[in-house]
Image 1 (cartoon, rainbow, N blue to C red):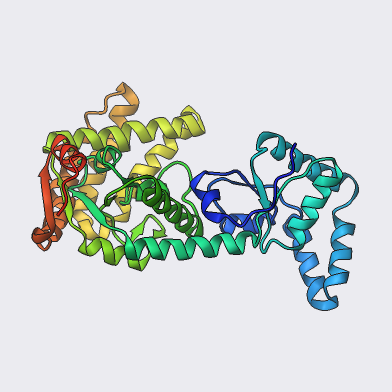
Image 2: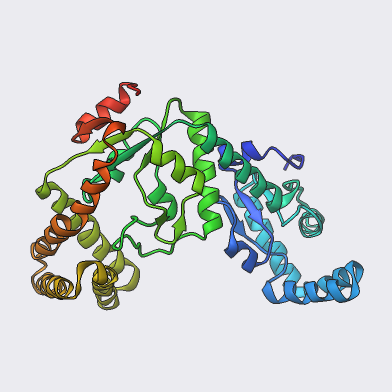
Length: 367
């Protein structure tokens, strides 16, 4: 393998989805890293904790000495093999630690001792994270945005993907943005969400032209919070208002939240546990809006949902779900949305069905 230099070209790393080997401890990786990073730690959490205490009490030299004692023999051999496997799979990648200092230099040296030169990211995680924080703020301040709005169930995410320059906030947050929006896989940490958003906006700026299209969201997408600057920009951005009939919206919600989620739970957990977890997902989502529905209305809808689940389980018939879906749309979601939209009439650029919105946006029309 030809020797490649270490890099501080953070923009190129993110624009080109370069594979990154994060040699920080698992607890650090879980707190936040980058979409193309894999965790291959120099030290596990306990080893890092011991070395940290030693560093505070006895200084750097003793901490380094302890680190070498903890990561030695078979443990050292196993970690070097894991790094070599990453290198073989990603010869174009780079490694990093927190600041680009001792841990990444030591990892780099041990890999080199095994016969492989592999470059590192100068400044490490801290520099990469600072670059994304600064880039995110710059793109939010300088970028031009359009917001795709529409009542619940209009299929905004489906339409968003067909617009010229979309950034899918729900996809980045792995959540559909409502009480029913939970996915079978967990959401990213807040730091991971912010990093994903910054990279998506960088790509939207460098690879596309014109305004960035975003789906209308509240401050929280699940537990991922949108940056305040983004919320401010979205609250003043022009709107593309997607419209569909009640029947179309009911079918979309049934497909996404009933059929799709049931299939995902069954695939993840097996038939018996998957079905139980799917039921829990739907019923608990309804329970979360109990106060806003009112106790009596909530109990009525819960009974309808339970009957629909029973019909689905017995006969594989999804039609029973239409009743609670339409009730929630007409009595709960639509009044809230219509009230909010009434205050934004001056910002609407276009409204209509998917074909109208997509054709308008792709025509290059602007405010």
